Amino acid sequence: MRVEFYYIAILSVSLLLSEENLKQARVTEYFATQTIDYIEYVRENGDTKEYLFVLHTNAYFERAKARLELGDYGAALDDINKVVFRDPYKLESYYYRGQLLSILGEYSAAVKNFNVIVENKLFLPDIFAFRAEARFNLSLDETIILDIDHFLNLTELTHPYAGKLFYYKGTLLFNKEKYFEALENLHISIELSPEMWNAYMIRGNIYRIQGQLLKAFLDLDIAVNSNSCPREVYLYRGLACATSGEFDRAIKDLNQFLQLTPSYHKSKLEAFLQRAIAKFYKDNFNEAIVDLNEVILRDPDHWLAFRLLGLAYQEKNDLKKALVNFNSAFEHGDHDIELYLNRGLAHIKLSHYKLAESDFSIFLNKVNDKHNEYGKVLSKRGISLFFMDRIEEACIDWNYSLLLNYDDANKFIQMHCLN
Image (cartoon, rainbow, N blue to C red):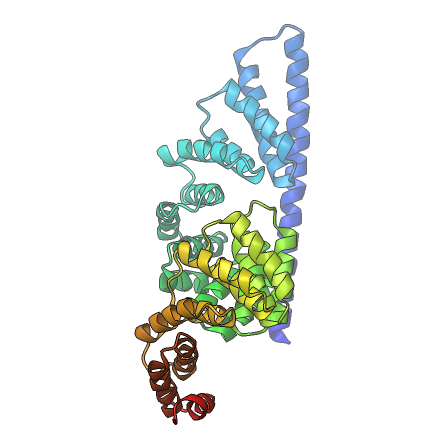
């Protein structure tokens, strides 16, 4: 009860302070406007004294700051632009113009204004936080960490920007695949600013990559339920669901990501691929094929998509299409042992015994007899050899297969190898 009262008290004080600031901003805006209008009137009537020009400029400056506080960003930017035009050496103007441009999404212009303040060593340490944020929204360049570290070295963790800056740093390190360091910064970000929903999203995705799925789901669920995270949160949770074998949930989240995402988004290919895999495991082969064709349309050299297409057609017993896609997978760089196994199985069903024997032999040469498919492949190669009139070699394969407890080989031994 005391804790609840404490939080309510803090919230009440914060609201009162916020309302007081807004009230003061409204007063400032009113008097600044009165001053601007009066000076314009007297200047129109011929009074061109220099001090009036300076007073006029200062009034625009104060009104710009008040409008920034009130959230009237377009009008504030108009005012601050007038100040810079009238007095390019009034350096404080660049600080506030940078903030306004950043709020309005003009990050490149914002950085240029913040650079002026940094060069003149003004508004420390906040200027490093503002510039880091603008640069972060422009690109995920690791050099932004220099600004973040400057800020953190000059201030206390109690600073209201600290949680956000740790989030930026964690995200930048995540993009460099420095997961341990990224997690350290994201932990601090969440501790300082529990409302930093994006930090949960990135931390959850790191846990997913590391295979810590329980932790991943805890963070990603928090991020999704916040309704404040970007659409990528559905991608990350969808991938986590796919990894854990929860294919219905994976499909649902990946559907959501794909619906929210423009066609050119760089992660759409991965989403289509993972949704195809989930649909494949749900035996929805036709829809899996549609998604895999979308992957190949986006990346014609995607060998895994070709292999999965081959598997989907193989499950549909469309063996000719399966082979076409298995061969395309090989041509585009898929030399995994599983490809030889699956292609061999398609060949033998189509009575391509020489090609089947070749693929099965490559598979058997690349694995040892501990492989769970070894006995089966020996038996299948034996069938290929039998139909190529190499009966003695076929019997050797069948006997070895039976020795490895592949019981199906016994019927071939009984039929062809006991005479």
